Image (tube, rainbow, N blue to C red; front, side, top):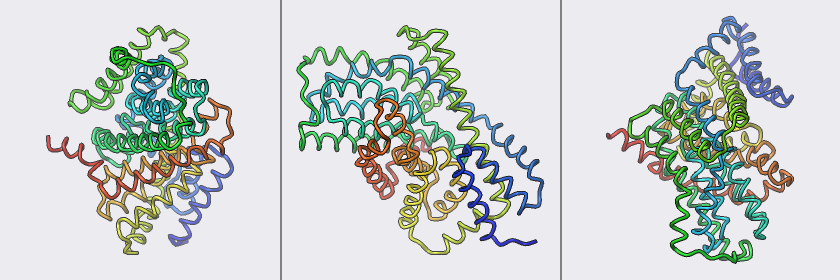
Length: 436
């Protein structure tokens, strides 16, 4: 029996939303949808294709970097690095408009450069700053909102777990993706800082003045506490950009450096190491289940011709490149209310990437655009993961935290618009690397 592409598409996406709505784990839901699609509409054995698809996904050497970067983040989460960051930055930020609210942005920017995870960045920085802000009488709306927004930098500033997954699936260089994330990450952090300074000038009461004062000598002495963070950034990213190590080797170096720092800081015990290993295994298993499930579903959809048909249809509409990106952005915002970031990337890439490349966009640039859209999903209810992290730290209701983070939602969209109009912000550093 012949089925139209419309019928197959409606069945596949209908089963997917039913499975997700039933609360089935995303990875398993993707396998179910792929199995149903191949069984009813395909001509090849579904079980054999599932097995070969899983193997074709997990046998890629590049994925070894994923658990290593996750383990590095787990070790740093328990190593006292956030306390040192706080001590080193307080003397430099406390007098600025917005005061220590800027600590959320600067700390998350620095920690993102060594963790690779949005949730780890938010939790590690939030454990220190939120308690301190509460003691000092800071506005809790700005405190929680700025942390929710800044925590998303863990996905944009390399090394980023989601960039690794995107690079492998899109078949682009992980090193190029890491380089492409640096300037957009710094741009987004700068936009956040400008907003907080503006609010600090407009409403000084959001950041009460501290009684303490610091001399210039005390400020420079405090910078020594930044040394471990800077050392890890240079070890991990520097080794990649200098061509000394592959991303996987750099991740192993990062694990070694983070462990060394934890031992020196007297934070590493046998119990702590086991907690780090178990946490890394759980996180990596969750991510890889989604990736292999999406790999199987993508193969099934490819056999059925669904991605090619959708791409051909949308390209045939004759939309301008910017109109296409606006519509994709709206689509990703809706998806962000329903799915986590990794699911969004692996589920939509087979359809979205051919469309944007046909429209003339660079796949490395689109990776950064997609990561920004994933960052937006981190602070959109009801699934925004950063919101759950902050709820765990404060006990505040999810919707209240989402309201606090709303201004930063628009700041992310503003930054995405700038990046779309000026794509060289993302492509400048990768192009330099190619030039070498």
